[in-house]
Length: 231
Image (tube, one colour):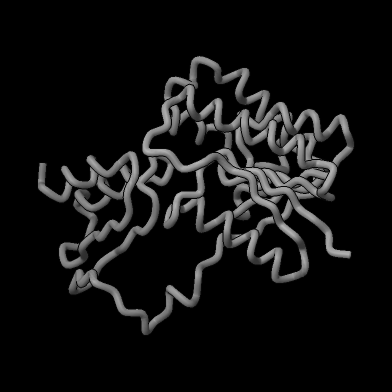
């Protein structure tokens, strides 16, 4: 009989978003090897303020609590707001996998106001790591960091992949940069280091014949547009 995984994500799975790509890619991969995967995430909205984000994460956990009896494993895309469900799963001895995409500080880069609750939120995230049966990271560096937080835990690094049907040498696209260039493709979030890219291209060590192409959208879009306009 096929095993069932309950996959929890605190962010909406908007089409073409990084979160949608990662979550759906993992879920499809698990299905390919015989697992039954049910994904719970918030609905897509035109705007999501702080209160809405908290309520959405709470709703995901309430829905998950009602579905636990039909699943063998809970897979969490790690999020500081998932502390309640993580604590419940640990108390109920339900196997849980935590997927870690960044260190604690990423939260405070994305949400500067959260620094006011740094100690509380860090404790909540650390507790989730220490209560997990398995921790999956997306880089070896993250694995090394997690092992310091959870010395005796089971930690595995599985790097993010790519859709080889879409990204291939002979793929046709509409963007023609021309000449030599460096490309960044992804969500323009603060923790992605977009500001570092913009500083690098203005540095004297940057080759004059190399252009920087940035493809994506997100919080740093305005910064990129200003840099492209020369302002």
